Length: 495
Image (tube, rainbow, N blue to C red; front, side, top):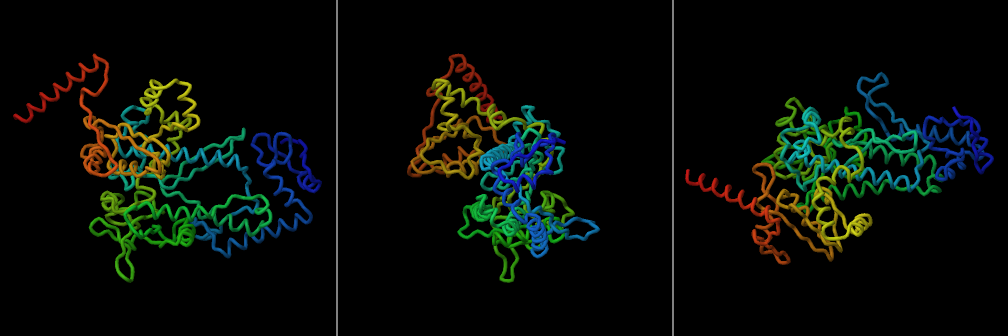
């Protein structure tokens, strides 16, 4: 233990922290390297160490415990001698993070979510990471939550990860470590809101003085996002699917249903008819458009997944496959909830994604000076990103180019084309003869060409071999292969 002295501005604060001894083996959230209270903690510490602070702390602790009991905040623990509903444990002293630090965390978590979204699209699609040896097949295929019935199944909206949570920890040098990804049915948002509500009642003046960022707005945005996932419904019905009151986080399921204003349902409350999900009500069946699930992947459909499950909805995957319902998060996302993935996802987003985008970088460097390209990328004047990263964005005042579009699925192409914003133009390029999609899956480029040919504002240009500029030798190689393909096709017709 260190015996360094605490240096603060207020005498009361210094006296109160006189016995506080920082541990040099750990990052000190409260004190900086000089032993002074960190700037973003100072207002809270000075208020808590004012006159009669000991009595105020005792009252705060008692009020916290009473509010938890009155609000019924619980975490169910199976076979717990204290009973099934264990009261939630909450420290009334909050962890204070500066605005700048939170922005870094926010940016990093959002970046990782985008990477995991692209990873899921590959695992349940072309599996290029496996084919190129970047990920060992034992990693996804050995995980119980890799769902083979979902391979080749593109969810409505071409999005797998609608909600994401991460377990974070502070490293001794002050950096943040990511310990685990929560991709299947991430919980915690409801508990976070309830925690904040309680702390605001316990320390109202302190929370006000600190200018703490609100979390309640998150739920309004979440409700609107859930309603927008199914884009064809004028008044879409969204439900929360729970395993039932014996689940460890059932309090949160009920709490979120109340905060979001959504029906809380169990598997037996839903039925699938003709590949459409319905909610059973006293007034008859009502179509369900979106399901926010709190049920593990393999329990969701006893027909195609865990046959013994009494918690799921028989036929649910057939409705997903027909794109008649949106599940958030998509079934199969639990495959990423393994610590083994941490060893295969090091570094930042560019290290993970850029090798696949190298041809675009090469084209830019051919067109412009390298310094201009780097400056444009750094300032986001030019942005290069996988198609999966476009979800939820509207691109205004931009020139947007989609390359290799022949390998976009139908839903991905629709998602991309509907990202067009004000004062923007889109250019979609692709070679229909180079489709690399799973067998039987329609190319989004081919479908868009057929559907949009006569739509006003859409122009289609088809190039021939004479329009393509290649190295002379490459041209002769391509010609030789084309002749062989034509000969084989002609022989097959004759037979």
